[in-house]
Image (cartoon, rainbow, N blue to C red; front, side):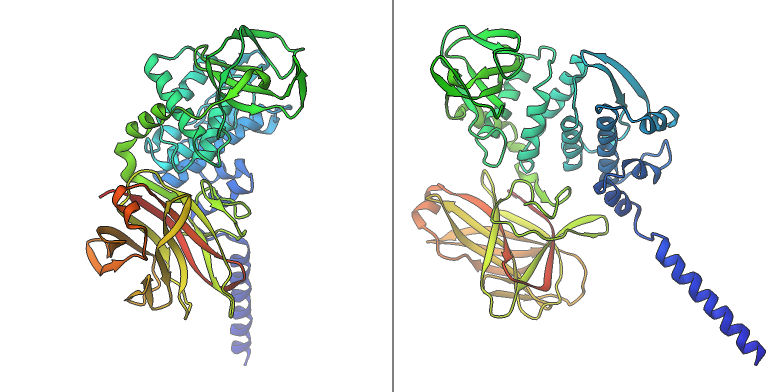
Length: 484
């Protein structure tokens, strides 16, 4: 009897210890912890997960660590220098702290040991570089601005157009050393491409000067010092606009900070001396030609996406939702329709250039009814035309009315739709898993035959969003598209 009571007490103690352990010990993968800490702005805690000199091998961890360094540098150079952060980096073996004397006092620069280990031109590298530029909040040495500018203009902004344009606008607000003719051309190409892209801060911001010897100012307003003059018909790209309205020479308008290519600097100019012009089509064509070799590598994922806001580069009517992390990756949940509900919204992403395959990675669903989670549209005549709708239930994947029964395992799937030949007003496509064809001869919905024949169309990727969702969902991780 006594022995049984002892075992019972020991059992309760073991159970209590187990419950306490599970309640207070975080068993998640380190990259998941780092991601959540970064999102909650606990930047020093992110670094505490790693030893001072450790360089992890994973792209996600390297990206988060590089972004963390940038965010801490921003805090360090805020209105009041954080003594805790300063002390942390002065004693951290893996980081080098440099003091730059600038026109606005001392700038504390934290050397980033992680950025150089990221894959050049990869999404993680671009995201870390954009964060580094976007967090600059006061002047840094001209040579450092030039270095960041040359790195940025070598990257393809497609897929990150909005954040790329904001980073570029921020960087061009600082003086930089003169750059070469080729680099200047690359910069103009990127600026005009972004000025031609909706949902960016530079959209429709190209203009030419109207007038002779127009004053350029150091700030928005005639009380600011003159920093140069410009005359028509010089071109410019405007980066930001002051909210105040002013009347000069009988013209009412706003002060705008614009980049002047011939001067290689940005300054403030009154909008009454600007005439809006369309972006330069030749520069855009050269931009697309320059990055044509990476057209096959366009990748859309949801890293850095805030569930309360529409994912970057998408447009449409967005319905907020919580992001879901699985094995270090962010998934975008697409919910099934509630019973008797047929109302959906869509968010879409425009694609440029030819495309003949769409690869998508997702987590299977437990839904008995098919959930539409991906649509491929053709845009022509300024309208979207549905070509393929891809749905999923707990047993099968559907492409339009074509069904393939999956093996039932609830693992992450990676499938691709290959667009093949055209017959009249329909495309033919096939569904593949790696090198295995799952469904052949999948015909698209009817489209305009003359438009298909002429090639006067562009593809769009759309995500259907149930206006009245139920609990069942498909988790979408990424989409790749290009030309095989």
